Length: 126
Image (tube, rainbow, N blue to C red; front, side):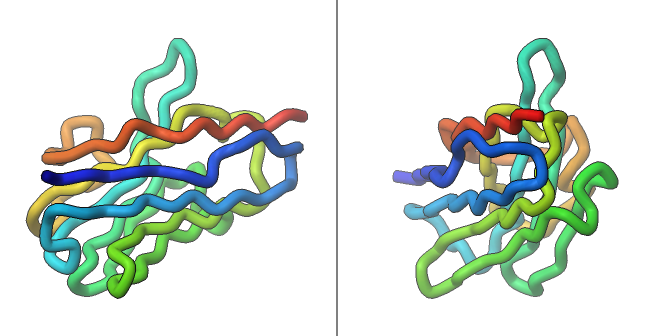
């Protein structure tokens, strides 16, 4: 049974940091494209960052470049999103998602992902 379980969300002030985790099980993590998405109330879901686990190739939305870092721990089958210098516009429900294959435009709204987690809430106050 495939599971993606996010954790690490919370409430912080602008300029603060959070690290999200996504624990994966039930599939071959090392051959997956895994991404972080977020959705704020009244807005469409947005791709934030993605990584192809096999090579470590990373992808970032322009809005988070230089502030967010996606990384992996293959031994723990866990994906991370380090978020620094958070802004109020980063507020949203953050999801991780996995596709069993290479990343192909992984931050696109139409990107294919086979599995999704339940999400963890991030709230940034000004």
